[in-house]
Length: 146
Image (cartoon, rainbow, N blue to C red; front, side):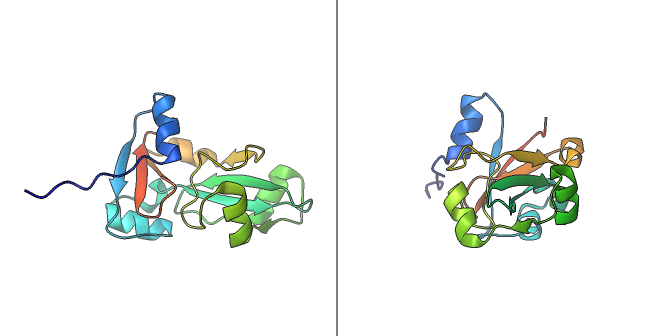
């Protein structure tokens, strides 16, 4: 009899469990680094696959922006919320340095640094389900968005 592959708990999984938040770890067919790829592997709407994106401010500080997987991030819109014009996407090195995750596998939970403010697109809360990154590109965490 073949043994079922066990997934080691990631920091986001442990955080959810500590807070008593129910989730289902969804193993993907292969490593995925895009919302579209994850959605295809798991057979869910792209919108459910939440994007966690790191934006760099002009003072070299960072913010986390969380949007549905079927949306494109508008730096102009984020700038309007922050009252700032000179924003850019953080580069791969900075993303890994400040979050502890590689680009494409950034979770909304368990950052290496705790001084990064988060901004959530309200549309995420209107979704039936969401899938956040487990911190690994082969596993998503499905849950209710509230």
